[in-house]
Structures are given as structure tokens and as C-alpha cells.
Image (cartoon, rainbow, N blue to C red; front, side, top):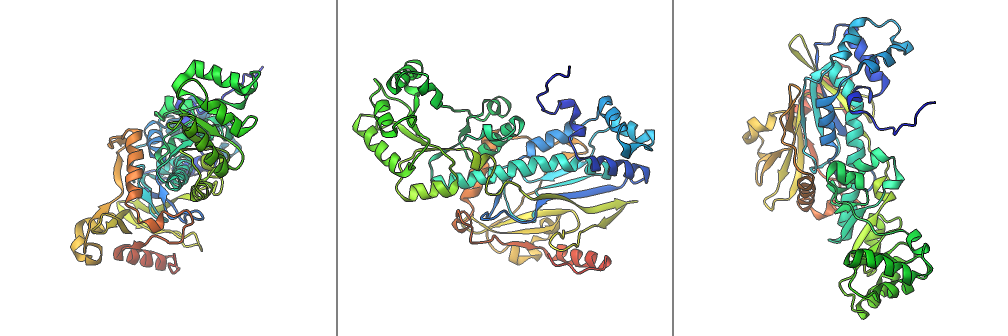
Length: 471
């Protein structure tokens, strides 16, 4: 009988965590003698999701782990040999996979960086087979975590200094849920209900109790008293199993201070106001009010604008799944190919899916107040070496290059920060983003320029392929 499996990818089988067509292309590159050609791919998001003015970069650490650990086992080789696609495959491809190792270079924006449409979040330069095989896994890392970190940052912004917790573990796959909790922490949440995310990534875990705890006793009074007996001042009482305000009063009359009460249904504005009164009148002024129940940044903003008295928001489905925009459209596109020592710019010209050629850098212009002013997508080194030639990019404030070397010749060269340091970067970055870009309903688009040299290369390359660049 077949044994049940967890569905989590074994650490030594990262190579097959990909789409089949990456492997068929890899075999084709090898068969056509293209394995020595050096490719540069950009990973970026073309268009920001609806109502978003910015993205919070997340998923880099898992992407770097993949690139420095990806291998194919003999079991993987035998699996692929059974595919009809590989019926006539030469043995040299299977030997290639058996000895596979990423040997390229990676530049990327550090996690917690604020980014915008069309900006490379990561650039991969490697033999084309290596760079091609990596595409799928890298996109899963970035598309999943960046969308959640970005959604969380919006919820944190809407909370106006109040704490936000990630509560969505049960709404997604167990493996994805841990990375979702990590991404939420990167986006500014103070923690998660997800214990495995604490074990794997160091995300602080928090919890209260369920309605089943209350229902397992003969009365709400008995349930709260029992919980208080076990947890004392750490007690957070879920008060809406029966009559919510009666539940608040019962919790407020426990024989000692408790950490908080939790509202999980009903009119959270009215209930939180009444709950605050009850708690204050019963010497529980330090008792926090937690709120949950399908919250998102829109509901949080509305609740607070109406005077809701909530101290901590537990956000689950809407944040963990980024339910209003569940798919981030990150893509991975060829920008340059080096053949026989000659760099050949590459671009895509199809309508609404065009790309920019060459190895690139993203520069951020800050004004004299230290706020983001605009970004410039340029050729790598273009503004580093010639800043003074571009006075409009160097007139006041500072110009910062955002893409940083992460991997060189297959070796990690970037000092990985602690998760709390990444979270701090997000918070600081958002503080430097002007208020008009931080609104819940985005009504301003951040300025992203294309540098003169990149624009010229784009037009020249487009003309070579018989097209006109119109991105």
C-alpha cells in the first residue's frame, strides 16, 4: 500500500521543482551546443496590482537558497527518462543533470525594498541552461511572498500604528503558509498564528483560543476562569461565542488583569466601542481589544475612521491570500545573450508584454527631505560612472543603486540579514515613500524613468527586429 506523503519538496530534489518545459529547453540548449552561451534574465513585475502604488520585495532569501543548493538526484533522472519528451535524449543531458550546479551571478534588491512596475527585482547571469532551469522556482519565491508582503504593508498602513497579526494559515497549503507568514512579517506584521513559521524563519507566533474552548465548558464564566487559571495575565478571551457584550463583561470581571479580549464577529465598530467602555469601567484599562473576521486594509481603515476601539488586528484570508489580487504577475525575461564573447541585447516586442534589453540597474532619486522622488531604470553602471553628466538625476538629494550583488560564480556573497532587520527595512522604506503613494486607494503612480542609454539601446534593438519600442 502506498504511504501518505506531506507534499513538501525534499531538500535534495530542488531540481525538479520546476515546469517541465524548463527541462525540455535545457536539453534542447545542450543538444544545439548553446550551453556555453551566457544569458542574463530579469525578474520583474510589469504592472502593479489594482489599487497598489508600490511593492515590498520579499522571497529573496528562499530564492538564494535554491540557487546555491539546487541539484538533481538519480531518482530525478530516472523520473525524467520515462517522459516521452525525452525518448531520444542523449546520455550527456542526464550526466549534465547529475552534475548540475548553479555557477552564475545574481544581483537583486534586498528584501524589504520598495519597488515599482518594470523594475528588475533580480537579475540572473549564468550559462543559459542554468538560468533557464531556475526560472520557475525563482518566480514562485517572488510572486508569492512579494504579493503578501505588499498586501500586509497596506494593512499595517491602514492600522495607523496599531499592531497587525497574520492569521491565515488554514486558508492555504501548509508549506505556502509558512512562507506567507514570513512575507507578512517582512511587510510589517508583528507576527503570526503559524508556529512552523517561527520554527523555520523566526516569525513570532501568537494565539488565543477557539470557540470550541468555550463550548467545551458548561458556561462562558467557567471557560474564561479555567483559561485564566492556566494562562493568567497572558489570557486573551474570545468573547463572541454567545452574547458578545456579556462575554466582554465576564472577561472583565476575571480576578486579575488579562492581556485582552478578541472580537471575531458582528459590528466591530459598535462592539469595540462598547467593549472599551465595559473594560474601562471594570478596572481593565490595560486590556487590549483584538479584532478579526475577514479584515483587510479597507475594513481596517473604515473601522478606525468610524471610531472603532481596536488595538490589534488579526488578518487572515484577505492578507495571506492577497484575496483581492491573488496573483502577482512577476515574469522572468531574457535581456542579453553573450555568444563567442559578444554581448547581444535581447528584448520582447509583443503588445503589452514588451521588455527592455541589456544588463540593468535601478537607481532611486531621493529629494533633500530624504523622501523617494523617482526611480531610473538604466544600464548597469551607466549612472554610477557618469552621474555628473545627468544633472537632472543628480541635482539635489542622493542617488542610490538598488540592485546589489548576491551571488558570484555560484557562491553567496551577500550577508543575509535577520528577519527583523528586513522588517525594519520595509518600515523605513515606507516612511520614506511620500504619503500620496501610501493611500489605500491608489490614485498616484510613482515616476519611473528610462535612462538615455537604455532608451537608445532599446530603440536600436527594436529596430534590429523590425519593431518600434512602445512600452
